[in-house]
Image (spheres, rainbow, N blue to C red):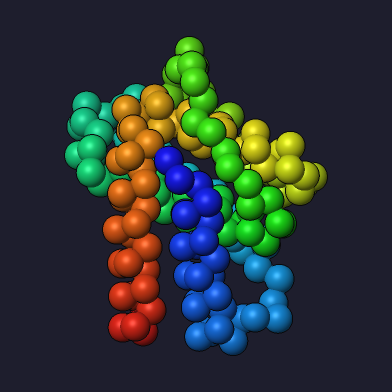
Length: 162
């Protein structure tokens, strides 16, 4: 996965949105953290991994991937805000954690990053999120392609007054 390319695409989208909405002088860090937490919840909801009371299966793979990529947008944007635009590698080994446990872990990693705002905590958060990709069966190529497609959707939404 070409993280440099994704960071550049996200930087351009952020500039476009912030300029269009007169937010260039605003600190959006906390709003982006909250947005990431909400997106993580939406992702968990699509997987249904925590819904022990229901027999309904997970949403289709494509829908879950789209929700996953929404989180990538905010993780990249937070990295840009903090000046942490460096390559992050997907974990080489698969985690032995359950999907439910990994979601809880990522929530905690996001909160830790919000509190400490260090490159170390950013990398832990990003890697934890990418470990969800492994558990969900997404390849780096699928993630990158889905990100590119969603990036264009986000521009189109801005053009239409979303």
